[in-house]
Amino acid sequence: MKKSLQALIITGLLLTVFGTMCGCQSTAQTSQSSSDIIRSSEVEATSNSGKSETKLDIHEEKMPALDIKQNGGGDEQSAFYGAQEISKLGLFSQKFENLVKESCTEKEFQEYMTWSEENDNPVDNKDRPYNINEMPNLPNVVKKYSLNHDKVYEILKDLQKYYTELSSESENAKYADMIYTDEEIEAIASGDVKKCFNLFTYNTSIMKNDLIYTPAYIYNNTMDKLEEAGITAEEIAARTEIYGSFSLTDEQMTALQNKMLKYVALQAEKGNFSGTYKIPTTATFSVPEKIGNATFVTQT
Image 1 (tube, rainbow, N blue to C red):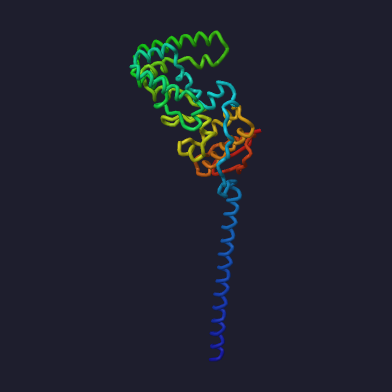
Image 2 (image 1 turned 180 degrees about the vertical axis):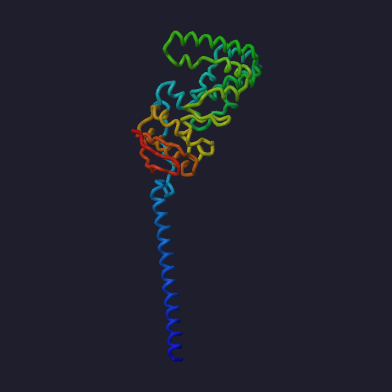
């Protein structure tokens, strides 16, 4: 009886140990299986996201030198090197210059002439932004030399009438672009520089506070400088088609479109662009179809 009891105890102990071992093995298998499922889900989620998980390796585009002689006629040069949207703010009629002369001392007028001559070449805008408070434009000249409001107003109203009549007699759209609105005339005559420049819509150049960045500036300066200026990926993307119409060489156009694509891609990687960028066929740089929340598609 005693031996039978001992045998039962030993058998019970063996069963307990065996059960524990089986339970541990089952738990380990379950844990391993769950881990595999989690890893599988992570891989699947990454695979299905369609987003670029690899950091982009993007370097500055090497930009071929610009030659003003190749960039089309006067209007196109103005659009590429200057701020075409505000061209009428640089139109100084003879009557206006006479008013400046009669309102200034001889020394001041000579300073005005020097100021105008030194800033008359729009090609300079490829190296610097156009500063609305430092450049010789109509409202700035009115402000600087305290020109009489009513006299300036009268001069501009005469020009408004002249260009309106010229526009109605001609199919040339540029005459219509030279017609001053009443609001523009008042802002110029008041010497309100900021208000005057804010009345215009900028589709080609880009205005940031008191600075205007021309297409030539965007072409000629680094992506770091564009970012420092606060130029957004949306602003670059909105101008892709417009910039594609400039009279650049094939090499220059490819470099410009590559640069714009790279800039938007870098901003998308930083989470600063979530739209769709249509890549021009002239661009040769390649990017993933998805970068962050942005989509990149090639134009057809």
